[in-house]
Structure formats: C-alpha cells, structure tokens
Image (tube, rainbow, N blue to C red; front, side):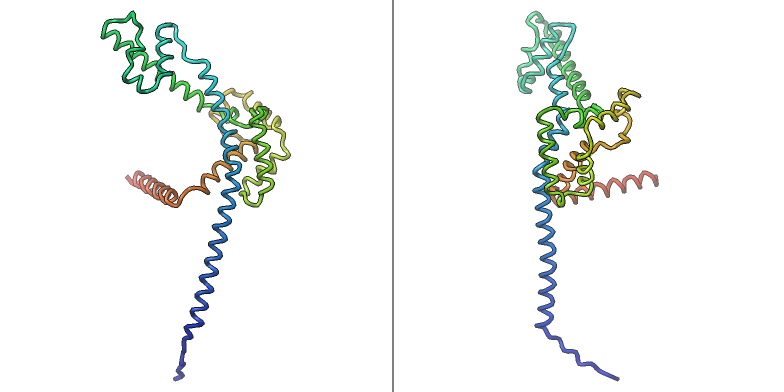
Length: 254
C-alpha cells in the first residue's frame, strides 16, 4: 500500500484564502460602486420624470379646483365650499359656522350639517375619480410637450441619459433611441386614431403601439425606486408575495 505524507503549508493556505477574500471583496466593492453610480445617474432625472408623468394629474386637479363645487341651493353651495376650504379641526369643532343663521332648530342644524358633509365627500370623491380616471393618452407627455416646463425637463432627461447611457437599463436605452427619432405629433396621431373609435378607448384598452416618451419616463421612475429600495423592503415584498401565492394555492385546493 502506498502512503502519502501530506503536509499542509499553512502560510500558503492563508495566502490563498487572503487572495480569495480580496477577490470577493473587490467584486462586491465594484458592484456596490457601480450601483451607487447608477443611483446617482437615475437620481438626476427622477424628479423630472415624475414631474412630467404627474403633470396631467396636477393640471386636471387645478382645473377641477377652479371649477369648484356647485349646487342649485345657494346656501348649501356656500356652506359646502367653506367646508371644503376649512381645516379639519374647524370641521370638527367649529362646524356650527357652516350652518346659515336662518336655521335655528337643533334637528334642522344637524340635518343640514350632515348634508354639507355628505355633499363635500361626494364632491371630493368625484374629483378624485375624475383626476385618477384619466386615460393613458391624457397622461402621455406627447399631449403636454408644448408646455415650457415639460419641454425643458424632457430635454434635460434626454441629454442626461445620452451622456450616461451605460448606466441605464436596456429598456431605457431602447426608449431613448426611439425618442431621438420620433416626433411627438406622430405618437399623438396614433392615440387620436384609437380615440376616433371610442373616446374612452384607453380607459378600457391597453396601448398597442409604442409611446417611447411615456415609456422612457415610467422606466426611469420605476427603476429608480427599485434601485433605492432597502433590503428590508425587498424581504417584506418577497414574504408578502410568498404568502399571497400560498393563500391562492390554499383556495384552489379548497
């Protein structure tokens, strides 16, 4: 029988381990540095992308606020408008000031205040639905690109992404390339063709053509949020997703 006399040179082992640790550390350090660079690149345009994507909502909300609440009953209209403008503490503790002085009976006062509260809630809900219920076409930058603020921010986004292209995802690169060669009017015409079939087309149907202007901004916003999510948030999301899948499987078995 042949026997081998193995001798362990701890100095060599220690050197190998040190090299491996150094390599792993370098890899993680490089990845961490790369992620920081990407976050900074996204951060430069995130606020601009969010502003443009939310522009339509703010604009419509301002228009609704300008129109204000209307009612055939002048007294009720006045009280509801004052109620909507009042601080929540005034609504709770100073509610009597929303009742016209002509109403003196306690029960009538209570009924009137309830009506004011109901009308205010109804109006706020209708306003919310009108604003968030906008179609995809109304939210697209191509419908607001002539606004100076939108145009200026869009140019900043396009220039910044172009200079730092290697730090952005393939999806953003693709949309950026398309934006450079697409005319917003051409994209708007595609929206109009669908709207000619049904004015609420995009409230019930997905878009079946490219809108690189919208896709570029939405990708920047979503990917920046993903990059800046903490590990705890990721773990919570994974746990929530796992629980949801298990609950679905449980329902199917039942």
